[in-house]
Length: 271
Ligand code: ATP
Figure (cartoon, rainbow, N blue to C red):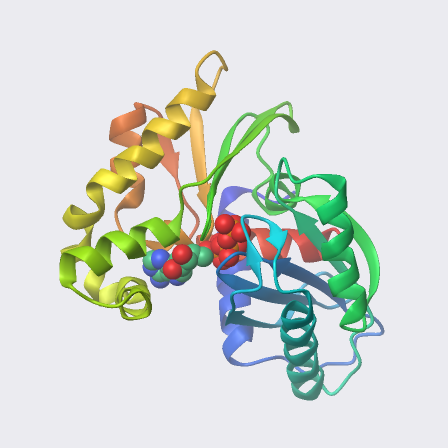
């Protein structure tokens, strides 16, 4: 069984294979495709469900869970697939994908078509919190996914998702705050924000927007019996974000070492 520690181990291993893919002799590979607002991530597991490769690219093809650039999305997934196939010296056939909570069936269809259009056979289409929990293995608590465009809140009871919500505040808003505070363009702010060495200086600047996210979290979990919050999603890479959220919500808040890779890995696990 995977615990929070082995989630960290898994994510660390994935980070390592993103840099140095492990070519092997696996008879089958499983790929997770995470199409996000800010970022498209592919995670590849071998027949033993060990991460062997991964790739990601910042792309503007999805907005708040909706595919807005269909052709662009296919191109990005196809290119990342080809890049990984070359590195692994194999063909990647099977993929799973996920849709954000609350996205309607129609857009689930669009995501499925993108993955198929990129040349994969799709084996599963699941919702993002279920995917994240394939790695986190939480029985009770809230999984909060702060992505690019939105914050998703999912409440788990006895290992099952019992409540989901998705609110339009995410990393894009963080970048807008940085852009305003430092008089930078949005894309400069985006790059500046992602650098870990800037996080200490940025945290006080971003505190109000983090507190806004925390108030959104509180609003959704009120009335549910939540003892722990688990943070996933790229925006949670911000050093110290967990402390502000914990203080503001009054609920113990934990995050894995690289929260950005939890959902993509979980998608691959469900392949
Ligand atoms: P959504 O879930 O809203 O569709 P997404 O799936 O693209 O979006 P993620 O890939 O989880 O979201 O996260 C992307 C966001 O995380 C972006 O706003 C990006 O700037 C932010 N981000 C990524 N890395 C870092 C970092 N190291 N520090 C701070 N923010 C980061």
